[in-house]
Image 1 (cartoon, rainbow, N blue to C red):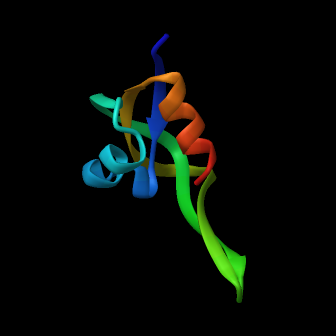
Image 2: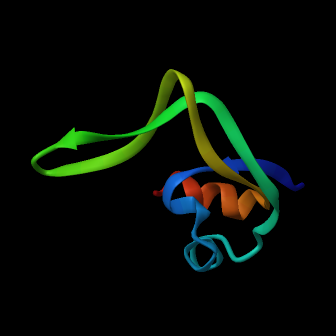
Length: 76
């Protein structure tokens, strides 16, 4: 069964998604209004997240993913 996955950050990279999720197909683009991208972490590593912020927009992509793809995304 296919699901829709809303991606931002590095999961907008088509080549990376094809490597991680071979069954994934891009459906379209989207925007997440009133949110901003933030890097969080420590000296040993960081990650990208989103948090609410008025008048900001986060670019996003909508992917169709399989169960296998969803499991692969959970590893990252």
